[in-house]
Length: 593
Ligand code: ASN
Image (cartoon, rainbow, N blue to C red; front, side, top):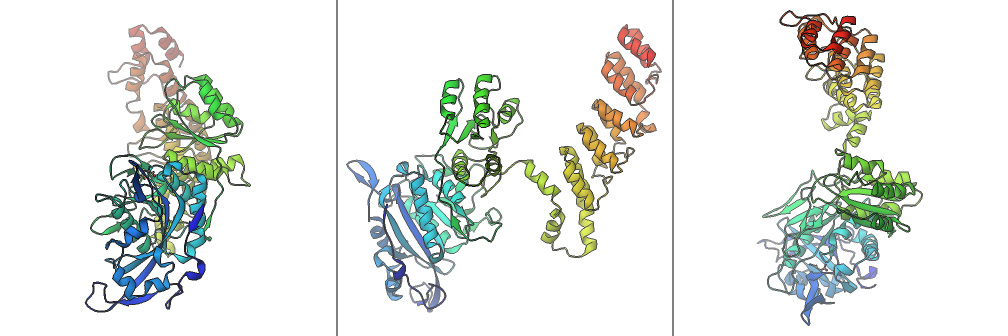
């Protein structure tokens, strides 16, 4: 691809700072001479409708037309300022550099065009074009404050996703935009989109690959094209916009992704092309699946129903998927729904996970495909490591499930991080925070059956007998969840079997009610028994079980050491109730109990 661009030599090294001019400008809108701060943006024009012209009734890209037109539009170029400040002497080549009028924030965005040849309709773009864009961003990274990429809308969501992964440790804004109507026409969205993208890229340090369209800035790996006939062509179904450009440009800084490393910016340009998107539909044949998954395919995004479901009554289909994942093909489960995430709440979803398909959570298919292509190209990583990367949030492309939260709970720095956030330094305050948070965290870990986390919490000095806001201890929770190993662990660490929650229930009572037989036995072996309060209406409960012939229920109570001859509210014993109803099996059990 031949490029027309400014040469290194022709870049102006200004008087103040590196490559930056500070100029006095009478045309700034201010009555006095005021200093305008200039920022620099590189506009990479790859093509798309924004720069297209009608030829024989069809739209196609027009080379060298865009800059000429923009130069004549006062909202996109201030010629007076350019002349007065000798802009063209500094920023060569002059025919490729423009400057916006002074912004509300007192800045001047100077932007230089780099036009690709040939310009492309985005339907013609391939991963090679993503690489070209990535390399140019890397090449000019230090010379510009931000980058705007003009691109067709049809495959823009793929390019933004791919660039978000390829750009490692990005520290400056990269904003893709385009339009639905050519910029040369009277009613166009192109002028607004370009202006908004330039103002954001030139004025805000948003270190992300973004997409700007119709007054909104989105995270690039969260978008999808949803409308071919509206100016509002894109949606970001699972993440709110990073910025809204209304009367003012409001950035949602809480949503902006922050890289956690200080490593240098690089662009990873290798992408694995043996990837694909397979959309499930009712009646899909095994032959179709088999053909799709066969070599050289290395990674597949399976677009499933609802919250990640596929038929679990199709052994043939699941078997093909299982065989493929066992061969090392990485399969990612993404939903066909526009909004929502993949879970394993249905048997139909669990079947896929058992066949080796990795959950893609709330990733868009575009993001999942380009991430897979990026991850598969990583050398020196095993298949397991690549699968792990796929289920990790690399660039804000997804919200992983509670697995992440579980891990952070067991991170011994957890409390320190909270303390730091709250600017807490002294030991007493730190301990107060720990005491306030740890019981709930320990209960959450007990609920998840996570002994590792419980151990980390205990090592931090927390007594595992501490109860939550309902006076429920981790032992209550583990007993309810039937986590026998957690109950055993907690008992071994001094958890008391006599703790009562706000309803007066002990862990033993919880286990009896939920019929967790082994937990009941374990608690009994460690000396647990029901309290007098708990025993108060036990006679009535036993009579109820007896009347309904619930032998299993009666057996649980017996294993908990309860006297089976206790009478109910009307003075009758359980065996008398069973006899009156002629329930022989129950009578036999209760007579020997
Ligand atoms: N076909 C065009 C493209 O993707 C659509 C557009 O830009 N609105 O290049």
